[in-house]
Length: 368
Image (cartoon, rainbow, N blue to C red):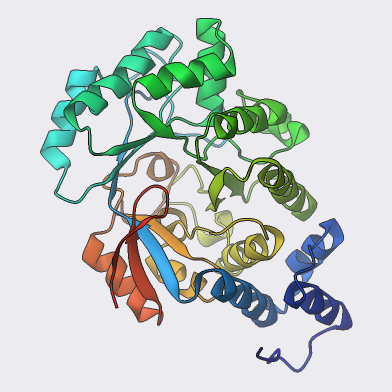
């Protein structure tokens, strides 16, 4: 195993490095220390070592499309600029047929996954959300439906009167194969109150994923960082996700999401720094020892920093996406999608091996 390259590594960092290299789990104090250290290179090297042990030099991506049936939402989360009220300019709610027409205009051969999220539109019954998936299943039976956040599932229980399990089973009948990871934000009820996260609380978020896992579904999970939360809040978030993974082994990937300012013209002081983004990816890799993959989400951090993150613990660069809307509504300055060739180029440029995958990380093609 290679040695730490920096000459000013602290005793505390050395202790953490020993724990990592001996497979010992990091605790809350370790995680907070890693956020507070300025030794970014040592942090990155440790995360890179862990990732190489798990995945070698392979970096994964998928050909997918992001779909949004509605942006009408009852919630008024402080950080969201995607939502609309019914009747607002730009508000929309698509039927299944309208979505099919949109997909047929934009889809290209090779798309394997629809990534589907949207507003909590309480003007529509639960059956609308079931029918939305069924329409896509009927028209595109070979495309995997990764749909809805845990917060959306919780919302559906409220408008339907069904349990979490009953809601998930109805959606599975309509073609649901996996849940997206959104709605986690920061898993702290105090944070959620301050940030007006007007949707599923911490226990409900975790319970939705636990129930999905118990039904045999593999899911994704996220952390939206860069608002009012503390470093301790972020580490506690990771530890709660890690604990559920210990219980169910149902998560496929952890996705740190760098919060975007609501104004696209906001200066750099209103955005997370590249330093903070790389730290968060690396710390996620070190804290989440029971996760196979940490995703670098180019929509939020940009393609160039995504490329660098592959040496800081990331093993996934998401996918082609095609017309991402939520982060861009909140001020993202990055591309709305990348092509397969661009993703392959990005990964190879980092000295890694691109691997096209399906939703469940089965390998489709390795680009040696």
